[in-house]
Image 1 (cartoon, rainbow over the protein chains, first blue to last red):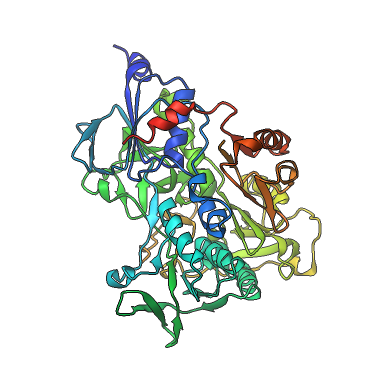
Image 2: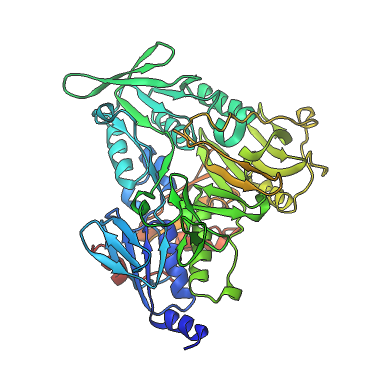
Length: 464
Length: 77
């Protein structure tokens, strides 16, 4: 039988298994069917719920405007899959091509797609994490629990970590009229993802909306009463805050533990794959039949010197899933690289924040349109003389233009004329990103690996 | 009915908020908040909103999504 024949056989009657039944897994399944895969498809997910959308959880759902069960994802088409929901994958046997499940069952595959994503990093002190009133927010069950508690009207909510999730939660609490303290280790909210200049804008937004924002501090302890209910938090500056609810927003952990002894190139920073979404094994050899997509993937990006990018972005999960699914059932010459330009959004304190490119790579920033003080602006980020990212506050319509500049490696500072250029937009200033080795809630982009443009090995220590 | 908005694509034109105000509302000047599963009574308004979106950011399941039978099957572990 020719190799082409075996691909046809795979497309016709093969067995594809997708581990991870969130948005990446679902969109991959739909793509496989749309591209003519008629074999058996099995979807495995540790959550009991059918695939749902996470971004509304920290916004509409927390505000109480939309019930949590309204977030189930619309289907693009029938996927005709065997669903194994509520059962986690616990192991992978690469030689036998078999996935082991928590209920003792095993599923054999011809091709495997891993889309296990990330989970919320819990509060590190286990006993404190168990206190009644300590929450994380990642799943729909998390959102339902937190929303119920906010409905009860706690006297004060503590948000630990002012990344995007933490800031959105603080925003929702203030909108509901709840008192909020935000504790952030960095110099400002969003500083890991957007840098200190834009972080200062986020800080002023929070304070103006009545958030008790405390930067440069960590929470050293959570204290409960005799009934095990959270009562107060201790901060590193010696102060204490009386709180009934604490939401731990310290970033995410990649769901790769189940692959620990599999021989796949999987670890705390994700699963390494090539630009075509094929996973690497621990020897650095690319596998033929294991693919990876979404938050759990680390893939080399041509726009960014082929450095490995891990992106916790909604749009990346979808695009990478579509590419992985296409490549899984295509001949080598028909495969596509995953070259999505990183993009994300956040809505907080009534402001629409959008980003394209990779801001944390930048060394400089320039406000090319509007004004930081008005919280209505576009800022371009530069790295080694080229534009590498752009961020807009309530100026979404311009970002597509900036995306094209990034994709063309246009020079920085930008040479183009812009609408509404102010005096502050005449000269770039340092972008003020924190030292990447400092533990934080984690930016939504992680860069790692070899950078051919600099001809050196760059190593980013594991974040706590 | 189920829907999802690609907010990377959305540029805050607010056509949807005008045409189907029970499903789509603006939050501040250009951030969109929406109900991903609005009541079926709003179906026509929501479809109009999806068609009117200048950047085609709104995906509605009824425009070629899964039949109810398959959704039921997804509840079986």
